Length: 436
Image (cartoon, rainbow, N blue to C red; front, side):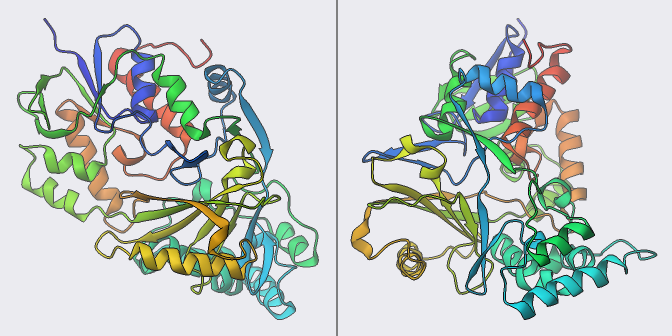
């Protein structure tokens, strides 16, 4: 009897793969006690908290309609209200096309810098790193006041260490007209990849993986893969089970996958060790105040302890009790330098008081700290070569490393669903479309 297809990970990519494999023999394993990966929601004392901000924004109508059917139209369509806190004011997001609220000298610096960069792009070699790319595309002023300090906080490394390979969809690049209008007070509308988004009315973002999991059959939970024998095509789990496979679909972080493959060549182990990522400390707070009007705020300045503050209760009123608000505050760090959670909490409360969002610590009724150990992969100068070599070799040996962390990339919820269907198609030929 042929061995089944084995899927490691019941996050959205793994669930999508299982859904589209349909009747083909497969087994899906998840190391946690529930499916969803980082697209999960925890509940505490009447509050719902996501593992940071997860939004549904779609490029493909068929994927949007698929999600709507899964959730039985229990989705809210929301127009983005996002801001950047800079120089003591809130500038609408994206910063690069909305500088008019900044102090006049900063507004002028941003506008002139962009204009100079705009007319100086031709006949130049490609930028060598992300910092150079930013200066080339946005100019000195916008780079100085937002792009560079914000991305230093987000990634946690010198930006000369990174490439711009991840930016195409995720960094709004306004036209000259947009920047001039934004400097004059004509605010840009609809820029970026998420000017409008969807969010579940009830249950937090976990509503999506829960609905998908209900349609894929049994998921073997609490099953962590600890070793893979590529030659014998056997996965060993933490409970000592040994499971054979015909093909293996892995959605775990590529770096972790390489570490548990017993017969990986030495040069590929070295490539895997070069893969880098940061981590995120996600401080969730339930507060005894209503805080309407905003969805999230970016904080590029070093004085603020978090890089982003989100208002989950403005996505859905059902995530917290009446008269309260649910907030999430994100702080990134390198895994080798984790911050002290007590210090982060103390500084965050002080920042919220300064921002006028709480009056004192007594306003906080619930605190939930969540860590995302592998949060954003670093697109450094080793990234493309190392990832390409690892995934090509593993696929040759019957292992498909897919999804945001399996492909070691920056991607969205929609991408996870598309990636799952794509690998199912690769394994089995034609599978049902999203529209079925």
